[in-house]
Image 1 (cartoon, rainbow, N blue to C red):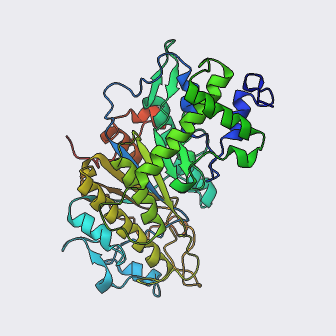
Image 2 (cartoon, helix red, strand yellow; image 1 turned 90 degrees about the vertical axis):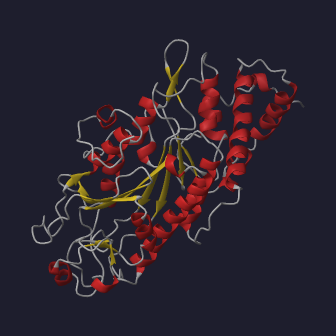
Image 3 (cartoon, rainbow, N blue to C red; image 1 turned 30 degrees about the vertical axis):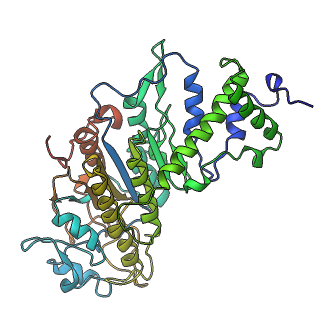
Length: 436
């Protein structure tokens, strides 16, 4: 018996989107091709971005999950209090990667990739970044960083950027989200990218970025087959329910094919064998393929080093090797593409670690820590003074720069967006982007 698509009552448009289009990555967001299908039904869809916005500028966020120990990352090796607090895990002065003859801080020896970027004028180190009344819960603090709100409520700060600056308008003047604005690599897209209207794409690997409706609901298989057959014949009214489902189905195939084709390209640089490198290689391939994505988001976890952190060796050293070498390879790839001047990278962790090492050869949850801003467009060097190692907040470093001021510097200086509107408050932008 033929499947009656026009009377496909058990699944409304909403339930089809919710149940029928499921990503193997288990992403918690609605895939962009679903949004695109819905928006395509509106007159005038396709106009995107605020006039004057630099659509060729790309932002890449590298999240270091777990609370990276900033003191052993950017090392105050000239301060004797550092070695008193960390007799077993402090980085020996002769191992620290010195930034210059007169510098008072240097890099962990595993960050050779960052040292190369620094020497080439492509790395800005922002010291002592945090926020008032720091929260030492991983989940709460991460929500604070991702919403740019110390109450950890509301939409993500990048989601608000998408809503404000990456939307088009239909014939009635209603805003319609730009489907490709944000892409996150991982099991689920981060809160930072969730907007009121805009939802990012989220997937773990390109091979898994495909339609899996039949695996979730067997009754969708004949519908999906019928949709594709009608797409070939073009016999369906585009304004009907069947037309909507056909658009959704075809967009699903186009989107997954486009991304899988993009990341199948051989990179132009040699990447290390690590998870972060794999993610950044995919991002570089999508940039090379010309995807109209404004923000990419990648994550490396494992920085919760309560025990066995080590100094020049150990768990943190292994992770920092991934960070430095992967980001350096990423920019080598981008440079060979001719895209390095288009891409700004920002790296952060939800908090730093306590100044004093613990009895397990590790460090416990702390507060302020450095951020890294990377690319040919940055003002290279060290921003701000290193926090005091003796004037502490309950054993933690006192923050010197509010992280939202760094966000404001990125939004104003690179994305050319109104930071007050997006951050929903006024923060003095950190001057980290060169003037054009």
